[in-house]
Length: 131
Image 1 (cartoon, rainbow, N blue to C red):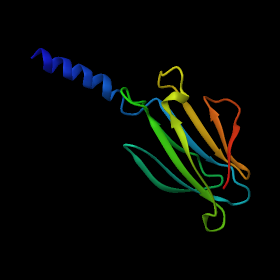
Image 2 (tube, one colour):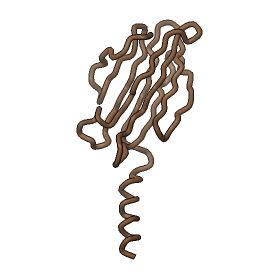
Image 3 (cartoon, rainbow, N blue to C red):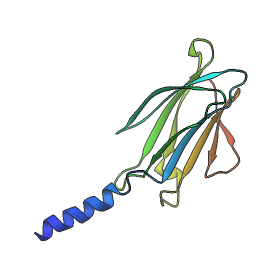
Image 4 (cartoon, one colour):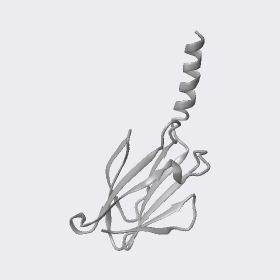
């Protein structure tokens, strides 16, 4: 009985809140009427392909960091004629959040030049140019 109680307590801590405290956001700031093709995924979750048009609300996902392994999301963003310009990159990983308190906000802006990261509401910084 004691073992079952311990297992249940551990599960409660591992599952945590279902809505999540971390936020991963993708914002389309492409010029003119540029459309952004977004496909983000982790080891456990495939967030499917979504087409984000300019001036649409940003895409946003909420999640918690895993307790016993690193949480990592990868995104493949494409834009331009026949999706000629693209970039696949790690959009979030636990080590980006040094406090490990599940309060990270990773916002990626897709612009004409490339991809900009604003982590925890800081000034966006160019991280990747389009390929």
